[in-house]
Image 1 (cartoon, rainbow, N blue to C red):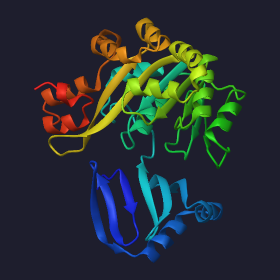
Image 2: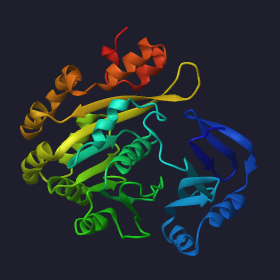
Image 3: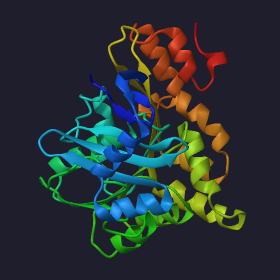
Length: 334
């Protein structure tokens, strides 16, 4: 069916998310059946975690068929599981409908590149595509820290090591501290979740590593504010300086339904760090970054709303749909 996610909920039919919309499949599944289904996906230690904590992130693979990123949880009516479909190999930018110019983000040798957006917008796939470019072109050491491991990267020109939180390490921050002693060239962090992880990621980027990470933020400016905002006020001036020097780029993306109903297409906002951007970050004037995004096309920058407007002009996306995703819908062009 081309679904991105499979929902197994107690006392409802199985649901498939196809092109962003949930569609029922088959008959209602009783809570006793969903409990049995979920437990059959888990190994013994995982069952204990689910029983003790009521929720669990894990990966599940059917050899030669499919791989899934899963979240199981207990709720009022029983035990549910959501399975995100993971393709068997990392995608290319072209397969994702992303511009080839984005490949330039894989050319950096140090600093931080962030892929952001809401849940389900394709951040992990974009990150996997960029890592795959590095893996094909450079003889480096890539270390990923994920919860759980999603795309499987086999070593090509790079040596690739993938670590899973709770399976191979206690936490993102613990793995990041260890990573600085494991001689990586590229560190990919599945999610920048907390103060310690963000602090360590910025330090790694400052000390000569190329750090890729994902973050749940709505646009590039909010991403920078979020990174700074997790620190105490007396720390923020130093963090602004560190970030102004180590940040390379922020990509914020959405997956927008196509007007022809044939899937979804990415819309991007891209911020590239340059002298003007760095000065605004240091001076705590991130509110002025929008003007840089509006005029920075020569440097590869663009606003999300401009990306959406282009999709509307090309007839790829309906205007009323684009308005739902726009940052400033009142200013959206007619």
